[in-house]
Image 1 (tube, helix red, strand yellow):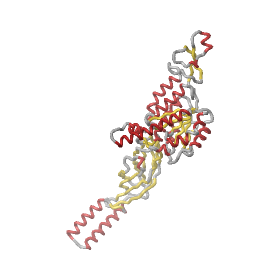
Image 2: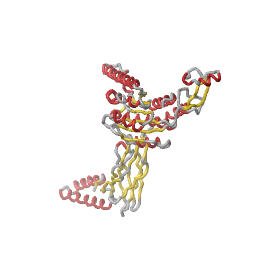
Image 3: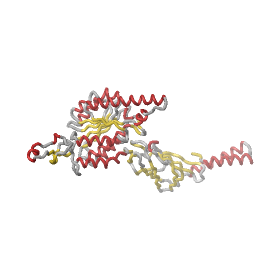
Image 4: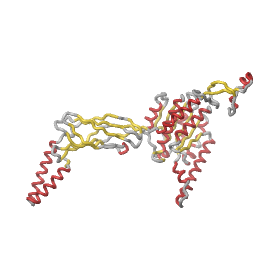
Length: 431
């Protein structure tokens, strides 16, 4: 039995009456007995909570930042009407807008309760218990009980960088020969001959056609198609660091999704691997229409682990999954110790067979600290930021000497920068 505010108010009224009419122990006892009897009768007349049946339906997926609606159907098979309040419990990261509602379910009927979620984190958000409080007809006491009503809403990556896709597709159409502009770089698929213009690569000159016609003629090439693009998400501890309001891992996912969408439209095959000390997720050989759906489903439950990346096993796994030349995109951090002691000694094994791009999320806060000069604390912060920036520049230089293309940009700039690097490599025929 759960007392209500009305019972407390009635108890206060009874206390005042006893104090005025019969201020004695017997008067208090009589009033308490009356209240207890009324509460017991009210509880007995309340609708049964134990007999309720609960079913769920509604949205099972949503994107981060969007809403999902889950419908809870309350079925009352009992003989009494159920009036009261219901609490639909979810974890805080599910972002329930209102988890408490009033319910009124006549005997033998059902009612629908909608719960609106606005999740604040990726992953699977699972419903907890549903607690129902059934109030008696007098409103003095209530029955209360909880039921399990399982339901899971999978929160997918937001893919905010999709706004950059139209402009990159327009450039891709130019490279692909569907507009007036032709690629001047060396590719693998011969397209046509045309006259030489200033800026053309001399290696593209067709000397036989030039000798026959008298004018200098160059070959034009279409960018390669049906290439293999392997996206590698580093899910080790460095991916857990927050840049702004989100972990580095989320920014890396956003960049990977934009590149996957672009590469798929370019006719390339996109695979995904998430790795720290073992493979956390993998998407292999998806169809062109399945790439983004399968990637977001695989990325959704990923969380960064508090472990160091096993770079030796990572390189071995990449070489196993990409036996022929591919574009390998490592979405990882540019932190000094993991790169110098782990990745750098092994990266040559990758660059000998593949074109390797390393994409890293930079922290804009470091640039802000570097500009600080207002007081002693700002000067020390600026010095630390400059030291960090110098270390990153040194790492970039070392990686580039090993043949790695490095993209180091802030979270909002990384997706378009990585896609531009992909288009530049495709235009140069280096995929």
